[in-house]
Image (tube, rainbow, N blue to C red; front, side):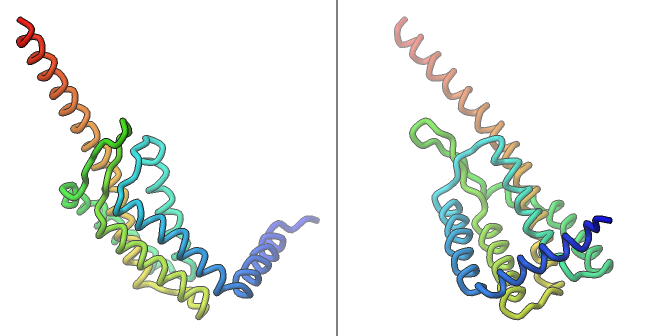
Length: 185
């Protein structure tokens, strides 16, 4: 009989063995690529796409869920409350969101505080897991859950602010069109 759980366990052992054997290289590459990309987009802004608006928060949730390894039921419940709290408070940060156009493409800058906070907590959590094999990290999981709630709420704010941006742009174009028509008359 085929035992799927033992197969999954053996693949997990192979992956973790490979990860721990080359942990310094893995961690260095991860930090350069992941953190570099996060910080670059936070400073320069990211291109607005509807898919990116949905996919980015989902990736944050996925990465955050990896930090729940080793947490008990109480820890998961505490992290769920922190997530809900972050989601509820995300509206406060809507003033840190800015849209701009560059070469006809729409870009936006999000809250650098959220990006840096989540990235630092996630890299620290990954560092503890890889170098010290610490799987239970309630404090960092709690911080990541809270910030992930902020990120999901920020995605909603981005959608709302994008709609406001479009309405304001259309209104400004209409005013310019009316001005040009009155100048012709």
